[in-house]
Image (tube, rainbow, N blue to C red; front, side, top):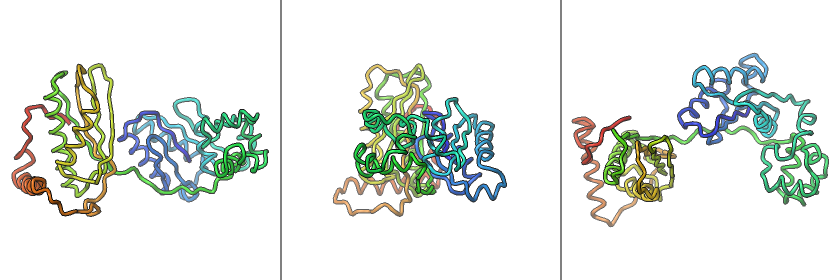
Length: 322
């Protein structure tokens, strides 16, 4: 089963869609940012229904619980299922292709509809008169290899025949953590924006350390008056939960926005691809100033743990809105 969520779906909703799929099948593979695969062999026996019925169950649950419609393709292989979900024209629906229907169903479709065929490959096939998947399936594999290259041509020829031995590999989304700050009014003050950003850095770093996690990257999202947003992500040199490292990257991200006269209403800082803190290699630093700041950070963590999270706060009077 291949599910496609709406474009630009919020990550939290996408995670909840994955949870709904996991309730139907124990083998779910996330395909960020908005798609996912599920192996249905065992699920069919467990639920005692056919594959199309499982697809309908997923769609109804997602609509009723999350208010999101999904396009669900079902087939005997990943390629067929993903191609089927791509052929659903509405905002949602279920299209199930039985094993005996694969050749007849794929044949009339344009080659660019075959999952895994990119625009350049489709154009190369068109240049040689191969416009339909059925024609691609009928030409010798060696010919497809000459047109598209060795491995790509072999894969395209196999998938046009419905042959795709790839298994569904269980994979969840990497863990994330985010901090949101909204301004009480639209602001053009760069100092105020930077102070709010520092506040999010401190809060996010503290959150990560409490959870014994470290972030491999950061994503900064700015929301402007009128509802438009700006977003940029970047990987850290090394996974970290220390304020110094996160602040340096956060300042780089805000500088990349090139703010001039934009009226900002909110900022969100997200730690991406979280890993357990125990997996982060600790290196001896010769920077005494950094070592002193890390010791101070550890002391401040103990103070907050004893007297509460507001015992120490960054020097900002901005309102906190989660």
